[in-house]
Length: 210
Image 1 (cartoon, rainbow, N blue to C red):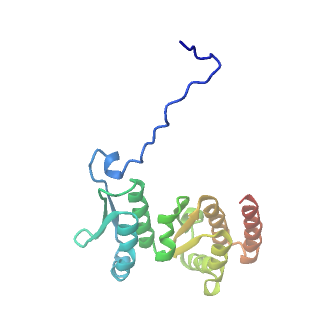
Image 2 (cartoon, rainbow, N blue to C red; image 1 turned 180 degrees about the vertical axis):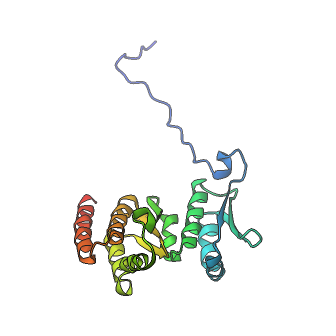
Image 3 (cartoon, helix red, strand yellow; image 1 turned 60 degrees about the vertical axis):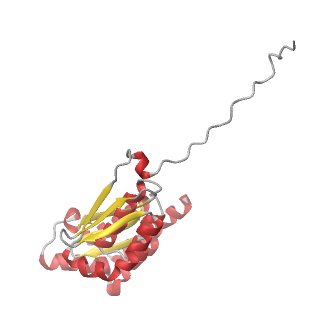
């Protein structure tokens, strides 16, 4: 009878392969829901853009979506073939971004890129302004013909929506911070030229990091 050498390594069993669980399997077969409220001013744009919103959610994310006219909410739920339960939240974030005023080509990036977020704040969170001072602050944020807003968007690789006194920023976490700092400086009264200089320096640091 042959005796196996003590130094000879024993063969290990084959590495098991676990397939990822689908959404309905993770929740014991129960259906997961999300609801997104539709503001009055976005009801008409939603109807016009519905055929652009439905396909990426239903066909790509495998999430069921419908408009409930009674409650004025967009309702989403997982299907049996939804690949991952996170797809439901991504779809809800996409619809919510559209409700905030982002264009569909920009909002749809929330479905495709994991590290994107939407951050919202109000002008009064930075500085309390009223009357003409508030109007001038809103004007400084956009700039002549939207030039200032576009410059911040292009430098920070973000998208910005200015809805009256509320501001929404879509982008990566670090980029959102730079964009918000620039917008806050404008609200506080800093000249656009000074903000551009800080923006260029911040953008250069961001480019070096990546």
